[in-house]
Length: 210
Image (tube, one colour):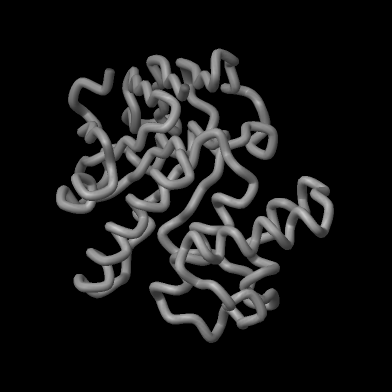
């Protein structure tokens, strides 16, 4: 379970987050809605360990991880722009996190093949990421985020930049993938329909976040 307790963040000026609290049970998908500047992405970065809150704490499976380095938190993060490595092929991009964990080659290869099938890109392993469509790149980024089996996956507007038809199709696919992999996830979005399609529960930042 992810448990964010009374997190405040200000960057030295007006508060970006003020006593934000959020609980996400294991296996649930929660969407964060709110206007630009409400602190949605900042909250994700606090959970990931990329920002340290002024006060409050982040707990994961009963342990306080507020000051644990990002790479030790078992938390995955998928950004708006996919941030794929252009010099690596699809398979190497997906397996990157596993290589950083010093996973053996056979396990990496089998995990990559499994996730390519899950995201609907069977056979794409040798393809250069520079030759992917926008939708394909999103799927590769999702597979890369899922590969290390994170305890929680954070998705920061992952479907931004797609035309509406592709966006809606990928929203359905993303919902199915998260449930098929039993992934605990927090999704940041501006889109109410996207939140309703993907998430089990929607929380409006700035409202009651408990």
